[in-house]
Length: 443
Image (cartoon, rainbow, N blue to C red; front, side, top):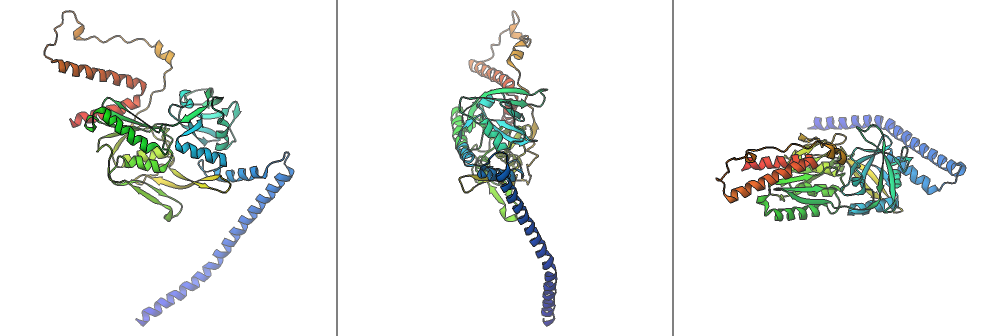
């Protein structure tokens, strides 16, 4: 026992000697690093004073400091920024679901403004703005060199006023101008409707109203259908949904999951991580789900898509999502402003990071490009199909009852509606066909 104690003591003494030998250089390195930081801060002060004293025009000190803070934050990543008091107020209004503007979610790429997605039923959507478009000019003034917030501020203006934006679009040879009339943007977070026996839930954003709207809309369409047993499944449409509140993405995912992890976040240190798990209860009692995404589906949309895909709760259809896998914390600051700072990454239940990769659909379905009305009208009309019933003197079918004939006519009407939907929205029609096929297999 005595030998063990001495051996341990000797190890402690040796460790103390090694620690003392290492501590000196480490302390010196830290002191050098601190001295370098203070020198840089002194340099900042010198430049600040030189600008105030010698710049060709007088500049407000507050504007210089605000620009310096914003420059520091925007140098980190495209989603970190300083929110001046007005911008912070606008953001708080937006999360409540009503604000003024064009109706587009944007980010910055290669110095230009890139459209993440247009918002349904807004001036930008009506004008034909698409996810992936680049905005290079606003009212003939280049946005190159502006911060994202500065460019967004140029696009804001009084309701009813006109703005002309110059757009560069992949597949279109030349830039083109789009005229948009600014309007009040009132977001309806979820629109619910029936397509045949399928409940379609179109989720446009994740704000305070998303989960309550989804729950109420789903309840109504189930009642309209005549009960849950009359519904073959739901299409959860997250196309061109730019995201929003993490809490709402978790609630929407939880609405269709009984158990398991929904999403986890991991910050800079191990203690910064969080895990969010589903609670008991599925709003549609296990009915099948087809989830639609595209390149305009970002952030909170990708959390929902990743969670339902990893749990094999939904078939994900469409094209690869945007790939925003980071979480921003909005931190209020003195003076009524705030700092939007990227503080963590999020991961799907299987441990996938979506950052810069996006969610890959289980079934890739491209949406055909929009066809201008004049081109559609110019198409050669199709020859009507001929059938036995059209032949002169053909035998009639007297083996069917009136009820059977009525069911056959209803089925024909549904088929015609499906054909029309494939022209209007091919991806949605594809999703509904999947659910119809699954329902037929079950029967």
